[in-house]
Structures are given as structure tokens and as C-alpha cells.
Length: 251
Picture 1: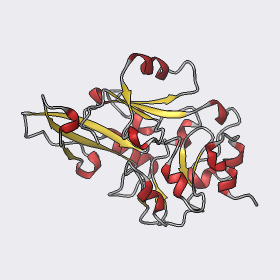
Picture 2: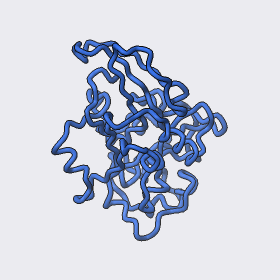
Picture 3: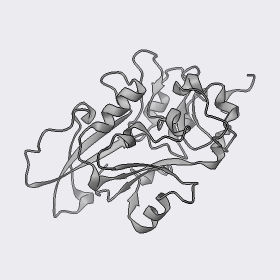
Picture 4: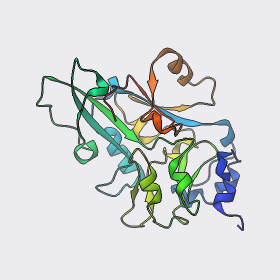
């Protein structure tokens, strides 16, 4: 292939046919290329997380780790517990935040009964205007035609620019490959009609994989009927992970 990956995925985020990346999909995600029935241009993937439903059990973190062979001590998704004083303006609150081992083993009981406590799952936001894509000097980080931010480890230099640029702290340098790694939204699963490992293993349905291009997807009704927010909206990344009933104290 003579064309570079940066040329192939056109820095403006234009949608291209999935056949362009099919040959390297196995190298990027560890999966065989999608079937011919999957039309990438017909999808635009994201996720909705219902804060009120998350119980901090860690099932999602364990499922992600097992599914994607995440190295010990690193996380593609993790859960944080927030504890805040009730009755104060959320924007003025300095919350106590903890995430023991990424929440992979759940959380011990809270010792502060006077504080409001809730859990916030986090992962790559698969931004439509991704800072990580913009700073990668070789185009190793790119946006797939269906809106998933991926990393081609064959191109990655391990320079850490993308790790520093991510405002959500969702990237890490893989200790064995010395290349950038993060959530792929289980691309090897969703292109075959499956949901992500974290969504599949959530016992309360706190996570929901959504397709913004599918007119029948429940995401459209959820957006109309509920207050949904993204993390750090002031960053203008056009994040595609939306949170329902997100407390204002969440950073």
C-alpha cells in the first residue's frame, strides 16, 4: 500500500468505505475483517452511561480486561467513585474521587454516610474531533469510517503525544509493545453485530452501545427525553460517550 494512513483517513474525518482498512483490521484490533454485510458508512457508534444504574461492581472492567487482554495494572475502561457533600452547588464542590485498581474488584463500603456517593464509568470518548488524532505525527491514531478511534500499532512510534493530548486520561503505553493502547469500543465485536464486552456484562444495564445513524436506535428517544451530557464539554471534542444524570461535580 503506497498511500499513507494519514492520507487514507483524510484528516478532516471524512467517511471512507471499510474496505480501505479491512486488510489491516486484524493487526489493529486482533479481529478478522468485518463481513461484507457490514456497511461502515451506515453506522456512527457511541455509548450512553446511566449514572443512577451503575453499582460499581467492576463487571465491566473485568470483562474488558478479559476480552481485550489488557495488561495487569492498565485499563481500557475503569470506574470511579465520587463522594460529595449534598446541598452545595455542584460546580463549587471538590469531590473525593477514588478508583482502587480501576474498580476491577468493586469498591469497599463507603465510610462517609454524610456524603452523596455515586459511580462514574469512564473510557475513551471516541471523539469526532479527537485531539489524539490531531497530534499523532504518523497517523497511527485515526477515526474509522463508523466513528471509532483506533490505533494501528504497526505505525505507532510510542511517542506518547496522543496520551498527553487526551483530556480524558483514557490512553496508556502498552508495557509490552511500547505503543499507545486504549478502548476500541470492542470494534471486533460491534462490526459483527455484537455489543461491547462491558455492555454485555453490566448487570444493571448502566451501559448502552448506541448507533447515532440508526433511526430505530433508542438513543434518539433517550436524547429527547433525558438530560444527557458529555465529560468536559468545554474541550469541544464532540465526544460520543453520553452520561445520563451526570452530577455537576464530575470532572
